[in-house]
Image (tube, rainbow, N blue to C red):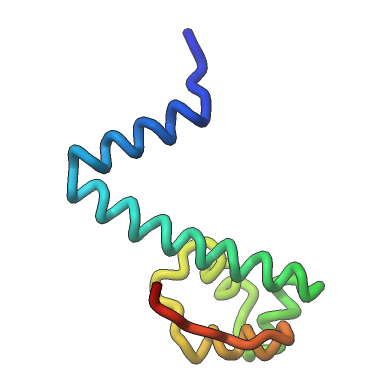
Length: 96
């Protein structure tokens, strides 16, 4: 059995998105959420904070921080502002 390469997956997703609008919308939505979660995780780590330490700084729980980093679908702007302050960053929201 031949193992698929990452390029094969990228090609498959691109082809599927052109053929299936519902798939494309769902994929793009999930991709955006994943990117936000990755950004939160990288920001926390670059500030030298554990999930527990960040949670304490923003008045939350470690499990909530974990959830924000893995699936930030219901993350509020006020929580993002708290994370920004706790990590020494500014929150900038823009539409592109």
